[in-house]
Length: 329
Ligand SMILES: NC(=O)c1ccc[n+]([C@@H]2O[C@H](COP(=O)([O-])OP(=O)(O)OC[C@H]3O[C@@H](n4cnc5c(N)ncnc54)[C@H](O)[C@@H]3O)[C@@H](O)[C@H]2O)c1
Ligand SMILES: O=P(O)(O)OC[C@H](O)CO
Image (cartoon, rainbow, N blue to C red; front, top):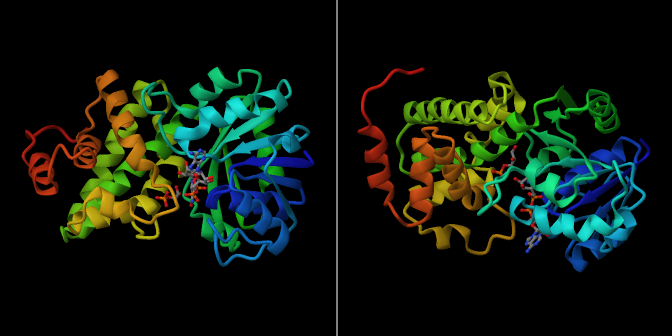
């Protein structure tokens, strides 16, 4: 693999384009915003979404998806709710069998589909893979050590992709279970909002640990109900990302929770933000999916109710604490 295309010039798409370029791939980054395209090409920076990082490897930015037509593989890094429209736009340029690595973390609202299902509908000729795990864009862009899950049902292709993306400071671990990887990334964003709320309310470290552990049980139940393996979500793409995102106010999702727990409204918590907190959009879809699967997900339910304005923070916390005594397993 010699050439990479990246769809989505936000923080994560930019950081992953840098990974590709550092790995020696000829890299084209498609960005929606003309100012991002010109800033990357003229100043080697994405000042809008990843300020403060001057690129140390060559990334070419473009506003034309046709420029990705010849890429050996494509990373799709749009926000989850925009994956479908990005596939529609890329369809005229997608060659049969093109490997498409899905890097967004979320569940589509309305359809309740995972990103691989959206890809299957929108670009069935693509060969799918999922990249997910504990990875803040700024850490990766700065070259700090990071490990992620790369899940691909075609093991040979998964190995080729991991080898192409691998750097001493960026280590993909292989898996074949894309559903497990997707559920890990999608559910942890909702749980990070819960942990932020707990932190913002000053509920203490014990409550924090309980939320992570019981949240992980919700994530695992959902993954298994969808046919995934529990071991997948116990890896980097599930537990690993849950620990990272629930432990750092650097997380956009946790910071939304912190603001809500501190008494702000959702509107105030999101005001002025250019970056996406995926858990906000995915929470209702995660909850609807859990209900459809007959899976209990009380923490995700509480987060979705708070975000929808259907419950006050204190009321949701009281609801979680007054649930009937039950087995931990
Ligand atoms: N930032 C991270 O550290 C990180 C790490 C791992 C995974 N992710 C995931 O990557 C995905 C992208 O996140 P990000 O951090 O790069 O985004 P971002 O918050 O940095 O930027 C927002 C992105 O949304 C796009 N956008 C806004 N409105 C749009 C619209 N109407 N149609 C299409 N695109 C629109 C912008 O072009 C931009 O690419 C998310 O699913 C996120 O969960 C992010
Ligand atoms: O800032 P967040 O909450 O979107 O988290 C970013 C990454 O998903 C962490 O792995």
